Image (tube, rainbow, N blue to C red):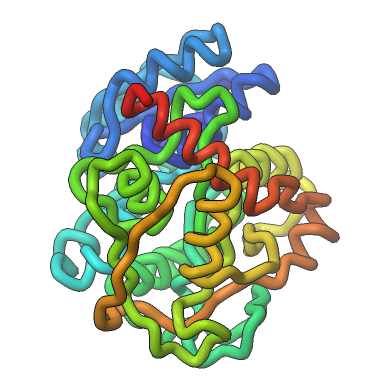
Length: 335
């Protein structure tokens, strides 16, 4: 039997596929390449020395998705396929709801038809109420989201809760990510968004590489230790391992389980800039700009449940994340 990974050529999906392949799993990837490229597929195969079956398709295309299930024996699905920028979602809410909710409804309908047993969903810390006291755990208040991206993930979680009740054969795990960063230690794959980056680390990388002249820091008047926003950054390889563990343990859990995947430590934007400069010996020019709509002051995870139930915790340090990220960018830029 095979594992279907939607959004499998994207940033988190590609690193997770590598981890799954290294454990001997049979992988099928589907991706519409809206924010990824086929050369990632070649690099996955170069790193693992294994072939994967790939379909260039949009998960919302139910006819194409059904054909993938007809062609393969699939018993598990990891669903990454989604748009993922907080700031972009504010300007394009309809596109975000159509993509993020539409793709989930499509895959769930096919899962029901083909009697799939295991489903891992890529959710986000943005589902948590911004008024929560940090750190947030899985029982913290959700809702009162500050942007359409977070709202799309919140709606998706509710859909999955209802689905778990209606489909007795299906076990579901929802993984709430905090802020994935870093790259594969080989430097061959990493976060490489199309266009100007929306996420902090790819933006810093491009400034360090001389592709952008300075970093825009949005907001220096938050109620934090240095006035800039605080987030919980997690290495993408730790995140990938979290999916492997979730897939391994899902049969030992109930119908639906929710876990935070973070480090439990929050760092500000200035903390990230200064650490990047220190570990990579590169200067990052930056300027302060007004706050962006949809951003909150701080968010970081409590991870006790993931440690106790999944026996999972992050291994990579912030320094590791920023070194690996810069190594990838240097290879990408030919530096």
